[in-house]
Image (cartoon, rainbow over all chains, first blue to last red; front, side, top):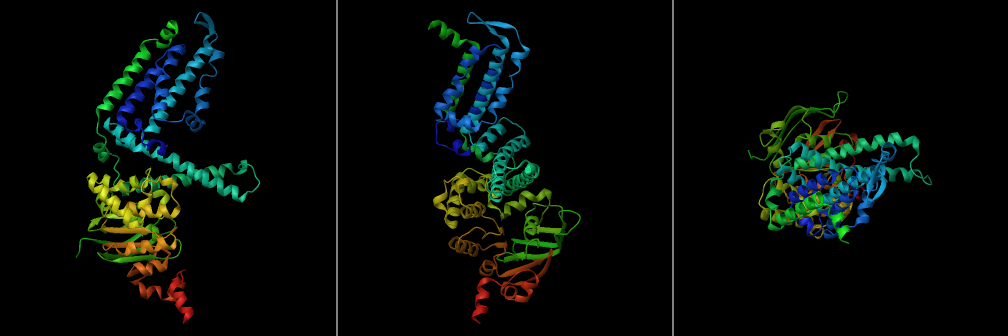
Length: 252
Length: 248
């Protein structure tokens, strides 16, 4: 993710505060759709699709990276068809309301997740934290975010080391035997916590105070940033207020 | 007396109540001193360095860095004067690229961008990793990470340099380069290491720790040639001197 965020793409250079505000507004607009309005929601795909193209990020790559989270998002509404057995009219057809609300929930979850992914994939964590501080989000919360972000990497690296060490001493064994899951998980937690603490110590020893003053000077607000903000807020508002997909469909 | 100095008075420390890691440690180190801290595994070398930079504050006794007592309220002042190279470079480097990581400290200390760039270039040049400046941290080898972590500290222009096992993971050429870097650092440096040959090459003074106590504090040549002293404390003569003994 760090490598993606550090790429020299146009979207990556947009002011982080602008991207953060657009993402927030987009997610707020997506979740505000009614539970059966999948047609309106479909129009909201315009933002992630456009940003995927502009930032030259691979959609398949994002699905691969989010493979553990996406199923959870899809599971959220899985019981709706069981509880909501009424029918609603969609395009002149009677459709199960439960299935519609499940689809809407999945769409909302996937769109929100993709928007967050695109924000992280086009914005280095430190510049995003700088944007948080510009919004006067408390220093402690910003540090918490940054360390959580770093902790994930540390956790994955430690997990890889532990599983490699296990595999080298358990040749021919497929996966990790369930009898050692407990001790491996404990080791993973302790070791990754130690390393995360050292990373934080290293940051502190080099002058980190939870502020990003030096970055604010580098992140000047350009007219392109303003244009990006106005454009996307306009598009989001348009797709939220006007049923663009229905209008286009009726014209076609 | 020069403003660059460290005073440690009667410092004791334990991670838990059971066993003291450091006990009654006292020494003074002044500008231009180069001090090697040696000892067997668990002697307290890394812990001592951590106390000097305030990573642990729950110790007894006093530690002063340039007359500033190391305590919670003075940590920013103390840490702006000290560069500390971790034993584990994996934990020290956290930015995306080598250049970003080396620029982290100068930027945090509010230096203008031109000065930051200058310091980054100097640190890259000194450590011989200019060709790696745009490389992602996670793509570096162990030795390259060690050099990058040293560069990230040199860019701070610290008054005092603390290094915990700096020669770990370095190949002979880079180890030689490290010795050159250390010898060209003329303020005050404390180097904790098992690499006694490197201590011999870089430090005029050596502190021998064992069981959390200072066993000997004196000239490096005197301590590192004392075979019995070293062996009594879980160490051996430096390899270069072992060779001489064999020839003798």
